[in-house]
Image (cartoon, rainbow, N blue to C red):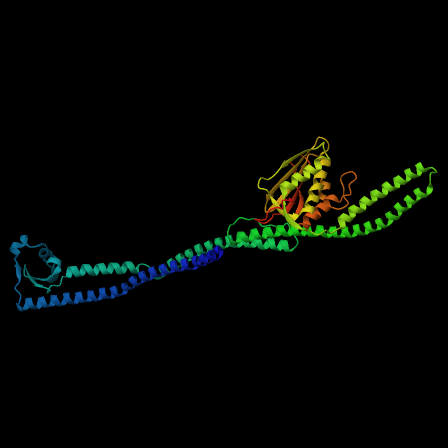
Amino acid sequence: MNRLRNRLIGIFLAATLVPLAATLWITTSLLDRSLSYATTGDLDSLSHSLQRAGKQLYQQSCQALKNDALAGRVQPVRYLAADRAHWPAPVSAFRESGDPERFRVAGPDGGRIEYLARRGNDVWQWSAGLGGIRLDQLSREYRHAREIIEKRQSRDLLRGFTYTYVLLAASVWIVSLVLLVYLAHRISRPIQQLTAGLSQFAAGDLAARVEERRDDEIGRAIRAFNEMAERLRRSTERLVYLTQLASWQTLARKMAHELKNSLTPIRLTVEEMVARYGDHDRAFVEQAAQIVIEEVESLERRVRSFSQFAAEPPVLPEPLDLNALMEERVAFLKSGHPEVAYDLRLDAGQPTALADQDLVKGILTNLLENAADAAGAGGHVLGITGVSNGHALMEVHDSGPGLTEQARQSLFQPSISFKKGGMGLGLSISRKGALLTGGDIVLVKGELGGAAFRVLLPVAPNGIQAHPDRG
């Protein structure tokens, strides 16, 4: 499942659809309100028309009632001065006002028109209906409409809508932008770190690594880069080491050839001198000859060491039972070092390596011999087998004095020996053999206080068993 792709798609949808939906919702709401406010103009026009129609109706009704009253078509209600104490309040108010005549709306909800006129000290009152029209109700509706209009007109709707829309749209946009920047940063930062790591690695920094914090495609890419960088670093170190060994091999072959050419005639000449000299002072001659022969043999041993170092034997990988191999080498060598105690810690899983048996035996023999020499009388040597990080492994620990920092830095270099009588080729030959068989030798922390070496070998594929006679 491409989680990175889906995440990018989700970010795109969130960054576009969410603001779009919010904007549409805000715009729709504002448009709906704007349309509702647009009827205010119609209501204003209608209220003015209603006002004019009401005034015209009122004036026409008043004039018609006056004409009917003067023509005698409507009988009046006479309020005599003698009964003034019983007049209705509107009539008394008209009498006291001094006006010659007055029109007023009367009846429930203003459904009638009354015409008041003076007749001496009396007041006559004529009334007529408005044909079902209620002026009081009409007046209240008109006042309500005018209140709505005045309330709406007291607001600056255009500016209010503009400010509201801009504020809400800007808020939604800013929130979306912040969310987008945050998510983009979380995705882009590991990519930037990976790019920086690749740049450092390409510039030659083989120790460049990128911190792993994710478990998605980017995290797996970072993990793959770190693993690739580590493998390339190890491969580079091995290549450099093998290149150095190749130079030493060329020198060793040349030196071995020249020494061999010189040693053979020396040995033959000395032997012939002894044979020709006869019995005269034979003891002295034999003693001198023996010294020369021993030195020649010493040189021959050195020549063989160089020859072995320079040789390129064929590598024949086969399944090896490391437990059995460790037991066999320890049993073979412990008789030569009876003063040293040997312990074994073998993996119960029967680790099987795919390697050249002769090379591995030579490596293990050299490490065990060095450990026994370092441990000395009363010392301990520990042999370990196991599997770790896809490699079969064998470890040799000793209780000796350990290695100095200088020794650690030049441990596998040819001609560097840290023990008496050593040529300094043993560890170089051993590591070369490990590299040729697809593994390596590394220095690890010792469990017995001294030095410790780990031999890494390829693990045999599942289903392949160690040869019973070779394991």
